[in-house]
Length: 115
Image 1: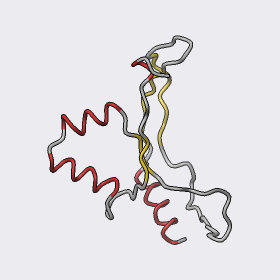
Image 2: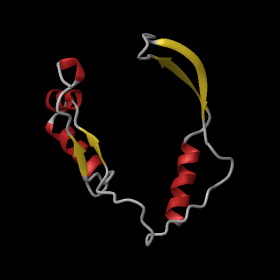
Image 3: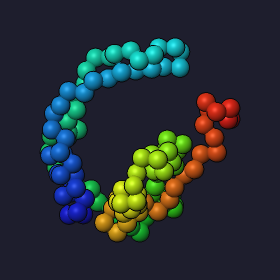
Image 4: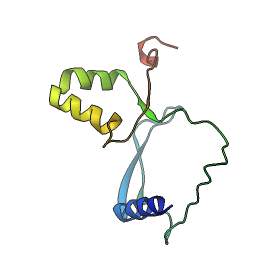
């Protein structure tokens, strides 16, 4: 529990109040329309205590990961050298990284005649 509290405190410190510009596009046709700015900051005024009961489960989690999209494949292959590729792998799946254990590969993109 101490690790969770420390992470929450670190996240709160990192998210000091800042203005965020908002641009919105909608399915009804609104495209790239500026919206009122928002203030980004901590959600809570004080530290939170989180208790995890490892003996009580509600669902099975098979892993955490990311999606391998067309653009990420392009960036990997065409824009990264071997050193950058290795750093990317370590940052996501390595022991000192995020600890990903899964990856999602889309079958096709809607703009390419898919679905």
